[in-house]
Image (cartoon, rainbow, N blue to C red; front, side, top):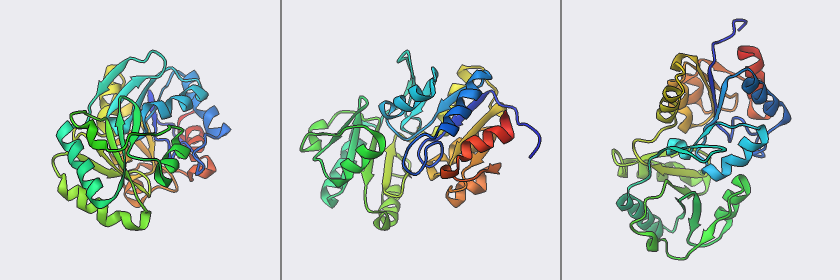
Length: 268
């Protein structure tokens, strides 16, 4: 493509998209996002991660913009701390999920007030901590958090055993919660009003940026609403098939600096 696409806001998923397979930001991608910002394009990081896990990446790039975290469950400014939107999981559904996980001996992360609570530290909590830099706080029985409204809950489970578990939770909470897979090991639960696309729409409106001039990058199932909402959606070369199918363009993989390549080819 030789024609440059209009862009007033550029939205980037993190894991599998902006970050490489080691969950690191490459110098090439960092420079490309900095160039977008210097060209007065609003650069927004959009992830299923907790806000506190995204903040260091935003700081590394030098951004002073809102961050969309928890798959759209929270929109919070990177430097002022202002919370634009927060849509947590209802308390009764949160405890129902905890009960399900206790009964099935599943590891679950309980994300409350941007803190990560687990029943005990294990290989799954260590995996999440390694990937995101967020330490888990073990508290024993998670049922003591009854009545609380977490921003998100997250099951971590062996990838080969995830599909039937995901199907079961999706059917069990249809119409009640937004249930999605974000990594090979992750099943995430959010308020049913939460999607990356809805958060992106609200943020673009708040900054008076037409949605037609929004460009979004993603790779996984929870990025579908993001790419479909944006005026122009870009899938990574490593993206799952449904994301490539709904995208307007597919770049190379996250390990080949696909974000930077697309920015220089299509926007700058």
